[in-house]
Image 1 (cartoon, rainbow, N blue to C red):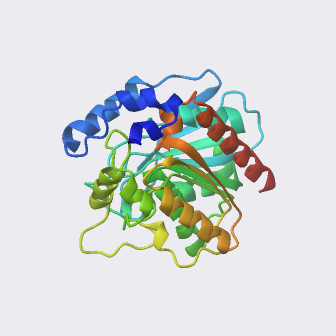
Image 2 (spheres, rainbow, N blue to C red; image 1 turned 90 degrees about the horizontal axis):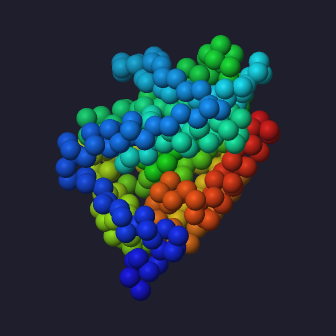
Length: 313
C-alpha cells in the first residue's frame, strides 16, 4: 500500500494539492508563508484581537503577542490560553493560526495570548522558550489589569509550538513559576534524536515528514551543545508534578511514536493524561481539512478538555 492509500479519503485532496515545505530555500519560503498568513486573516465579529509588545526575557528583545478575547465578555476575569504557533521553529507568526485562536475564544470563553517567539536559524534554543516564559510571567503579573484570572492558565502549541508547550511546563515547574492547569502539546516535536519507528516510517515530502524534522532540529539546536529537556522535552527524566495533559496526533505523523511515549511516561509519573490517535491522518490534518470528520472530532475533544480544566482550576 502506498502512502496516499493510507490517508483517510477526506484528507486526500489536501495531500494531492500540497507542495510540501521548501526548507532548502528558507530565504524565499519564509517570506512567502508570512505574506500568506496576512492575506488569509479574517476578522470574527465575536472576537476582538489586538497586538502588543511586552517585556522580553532578561537580555532579550521585547516580545510581540496577539491577544484575543470575546467581544462581549462582561466584567468577570477569564481563563487564559497561551498559544504557540507551528512552523518547525523556522517560520510562522502570531497570525499563522488566527482562525484556531478565534475558535478557542468562542468555544471555550477564554482569553488567548499568541506568542511571536524568536525563530531559527537566527535564534537557537533556548531563545523561543525564554520568549514564551516571559509572556507567561507577564500575564501572570498583569492578571486583573488585562482581564485574566491568573489561577486558570493553560498552554497549547502545534508541532514546534507543541515542543514549547511541553517545555514551558517543565521550565515553570523547575523555576517554581506560574501554575499551569492544562498543557496541550499537539503533535509536538519532542525528541531530537528522531530514533523512533514513526520518524523513520513517514518520509513522503508532501506532508510533514522525517526530512522536515531533521531540518527543523538542525536549525533549532545550537551546534556543539547537548540538548536538554527544555529544548527536547523527551529527554526529561522527571515528569512528576506537571500539569494534566490533553493531546492528539495522526497515525501518519512522524512524531507519533515519540509523542505516545511521552504521554505514556507522563501517566506513569502520575500525571492526568487524555490523548487520541486518529487513523489515516497526517501532521496538522485538522488545520488542512477542518471540515473532515476526524478534524471536527479533534476540535470537539480539545475544547471539552479546556472547559473541564478551566472549571476545575
